[in-house]
Image (tube, rainbow, N blue to C red; front, side):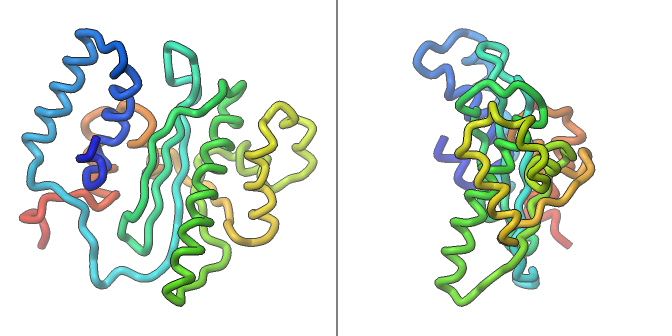
Length: 214
């Protein structure tokens, strides 16, 4: 688990295995062995921080609706960038069962917004201020719920603590923007992916082999 502090590419797999650490089975042991083999073959990989990166804050949120086969809870995946540099990431199972894809995406976006607000307060201490921080989401229904108060009648079942996202969208602290599914960087934090897409997202997050830099 300590390795995930510098290797976000294994964050989802490690968090998934950690859910069964109280009563692991043979399948979980095999999964952990695969993670260790992957880590052993990518020892040189690390997060690249460029000195030429611009100073702008952005966030990505995504959710795997009903991804857990045991309790059917969704998994939220979020990541945050300062320019092109990855500075925060998270893979977390949601606390309640979502009744739709839009709800699970909305909850994930609320979690991402919460982290953005914390980053804003931290960066303010360094004299950096931002307005309308872009929060990228690949679900138009979740974006509409956050932007349109008329949608309230359809979201009464969603816990009120997640509706603070709408308040901060109205205040201009964050700006929800639609992003194509294939470019959703948070995908790597909430679901298993095929090797090609995994490698693509890993590179987009800035997790690279140092000798591969030009």
